[in-house]
Image (cartoon, rainbow, N blue to C red; front, top):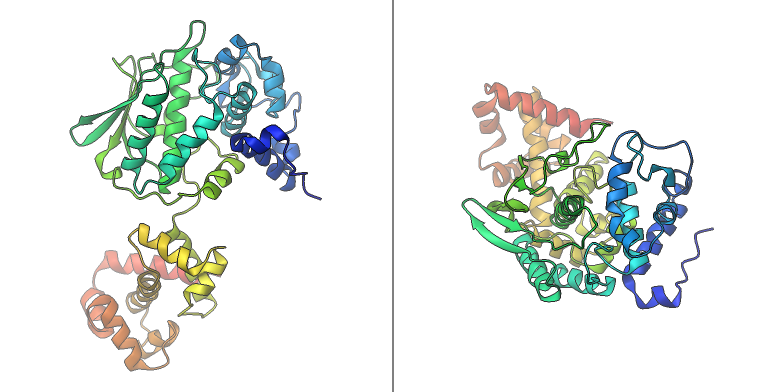
Length: 400
């Protein structure tokens, strides 16, 4: 029996609160509630964000009158971690704790600023950039929206040679740890926009005004970003690679947004999220090809991806792909691998990739590779690197 999904009047009026509620309910339905949501004394983690940092992270909420132990308990975290340098929380714990503090205060920035940034406004901002086409457009729209809402936050984009510098100015209230808030915001930006484009953002560097944070357990908060970190810098900024600005958004609906939040993402892991539509389509087609279904219709693939043919075509087009080209390429790659990694006759290679007529195989291979199968084999059989790659591909595609 699944969790009761009926919403309270407050949740019904506020989609952000519903998202948090559904996150908990989905975890319970998946059978992971004991592991993910229950509070278990003595099960404190030794690596991750330590209890000193957790205390700093909840500093704004405490100033607003919240009980930090109750917030931790509601987030499914052992409250004894609070202030304990020998205990720690992981990336999923962090996500749940931040969500819990946001909901408790109805404030996206959970008490770090004098003025609340209500969750309903956060939802409106989300809707604005979900309607964008590219990462560059979405980050600009998000910044303009934020600039219009608060004088406590001053994001801006600055041209920086081969990249674009996203400078963040935060005027936090007295009595809170501004440095940990900056780090958390950078984690959110990196994770969220990476998920939107379906792969990690290629950051050129991260600049922070703070000194390098040191934890007794050796956890490096900034390792996640995978780029040089400039500590004690004059500004706080993320430096984007210009090539990423045109990256298309592959998740653009509220359903995608709710799915992301409900998944309880690991904010310390390299962001991958759900694969791109191209990757998902390739995976489905390869599964079908292993079952000897070589020309699977788009309807069959869309069904496997819990989508519709029209939506799948549209999503692939946003990534600069087409269903037909992916299907043809996968079949051609396998045929080429057989030609270089085996001594099978060309007719047999054609049979192996689903062609009953040699002439049909040759015509299709020429369309894909630009040369006949025999010319391809003769031209590349002596290329050791190509043969090695072909052997690996053939092993992967025919395994199982």
